[in-house]
Image 1 (cartoon, rainbow, N blue to C red):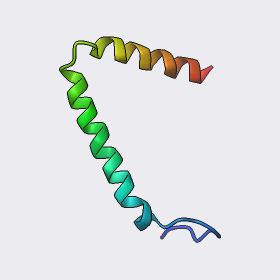
Image 2: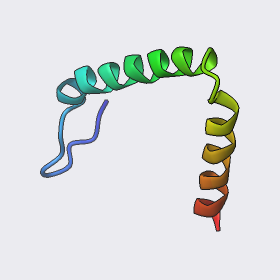
Image 3: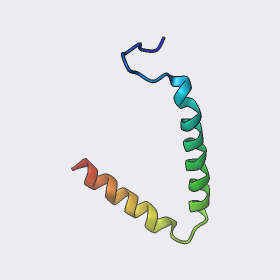
Length: 54
């Protein structure tokens, strides 16, 4: 079902790193939820997203 492009990387090769990154992001999100700097971090992230959209 995947594309067979020349020089492409198989999904199986990337699956483990993607899962590790997803797990790390979920753990970071949970730690941030109880952090005293959570609100400032979220505001800064929204600012960066707005700048990137311009």
